[in-house]
Image 1 (cartoon, helix red, strand yellow):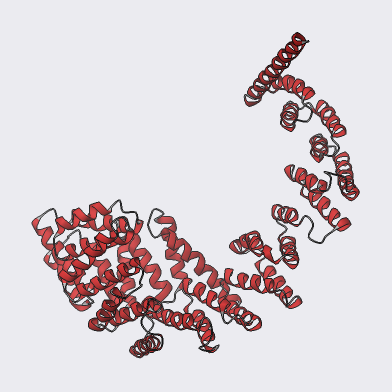
Image 2: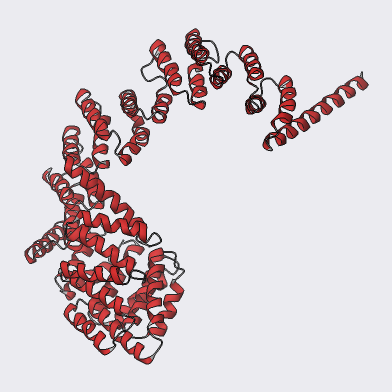
Length: 613
């Protein structure tokens, strides 16, 4: 008895190893496209393992590659009869009919398959409940989208519920680019399950990116909002659609209605304001904040709205340059009123920092600005990185006051406290630049060379630029003198002594004719004119750098500055788009490419959105 058992084991093991060898050899033949040899082995393997889909599919592929359609039909027909519950085989059989031009047979077979799948689902037999789904998947693998849709729709109509196979149908509509049906299906899903909002957005976001049927989506979402006023999910979807289209005025009306109807105290408006701020739509951001403030001082978002409104007006001044002395004084008084009302604390620290900027950079009241920064750097319970950032700002202010030692000390403290952090690297860069301003080029370059490998790409790029500038312009004594004069002019620009800086720059070409600093001089002059709000003059000088020094290191800087000038200060979106586009295509390795691409897309959509509102 024992000897018989051992013999059985030996035969079994031998058979397993033989099959494994055949399988590996067949796969090798298949990989090498020796289909005739692979066919022989796979035929043998399928007889032993008729349930193996892997063996079956490779065997069928071998037959089809050799155009052995008759044999392929026999194999698939046999599998179809043996495994009626697996729609894969019947779809493969129809596919073979199609390869032979037997379209009528194929159509009839597929129609019968759909009917059978729906019928079997109705019978409720174990394991057959999702047969229409399996059949649809098999149809999709052969790009038979119409039959896939038919199987799913007929099963839904026969047995429900209304959202049965919704995700499968969504996939079919995407593949067939039937975007109206896709939108309708997504909206239907939300009617039964509001938790699907995130997946719905994921399914529809590409419509926004490609401007495909987006108007239809907006129209249908609006209809659902009116039809089902109790279902807030449609309100949220419609708001999202407006935001994606950059229709911020429409989004404002929608967010206001939602907060009023749902008594959410401005939650939707505060979220929208932040989005508008990031998209540089300051007008609508201010409307959002003002609306929340109107809800009353007891509102949950009242303080956020107060500070948000201040920040938006601050950005209007700092980024667009669209302000008068009266605007500036009015905003400073608003800051002072808010700080009086809510006090000076970590919660209001950001507003304090913005107020210090207004004093230092726009009112040129260094003492008032420094006083605020000094109170910030010793404020209790402030996060250490925030305190470090304010110390850097204080260091800048001290340098503007020409208190160089204090500036160096503050930069050094931050460098030491945040050694491996981008904040510490920024502090090291500012110290290196301070040395550059003072004409200590060798020490400055040593520090800059260390920063070339900084973790922050911006710091690394700035360090490389300044290091190259020093290297290229300090080879000879005369060059060192020219460089020292240029560095001093840059220090004067940093200190907001714009006329003095301009005067020094104007003298450089006469003192050092045909010097390599020519493009740098044009670029710094453009920055000065931009600070003076002489935008046409700034445009002229940036264009000079772009036109005559297109291969130099400052070309992409000038192009991006020009794009920002058109975008934010001259209100010329067409020219801004052109400049952003040039950065994307002509300077694709530039540090500004990511921001240029982002702003290009936002500006283009905002322009289209404004036209349709």
